[in-house]
View 1: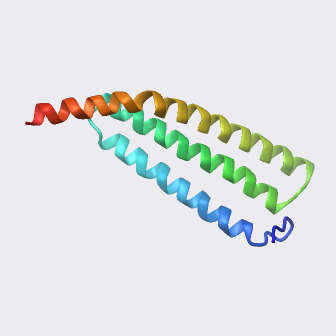
View 2 (view 1 turned 180 degrees about the vertical axis):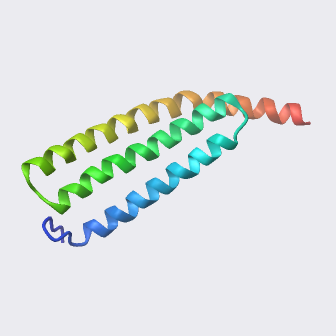
Length: 113
């Protein structure tokens, strides 16, 4: 089921996930620009970093299915490592800012009443 040289069934699925992560990155960046709350901006930036990490890591995984050579393997490992670090820092930032965003949202609701 998993083929590496001709792509097989994995490559189209990975490409779909790559496009989805890119779409989420753009969505979160648009929300970031439109937001006026400072903590929410940092939270949205963390979410976009997670999406960007998925994009880069999946791009590296996809590269493994295209060609298996020393150069391709090196490039794939670099992309997967950079994507993994982006995922890690994005998830940490997301977890850090989530309670602050909830607090900011509750304060905003109180001020609106």
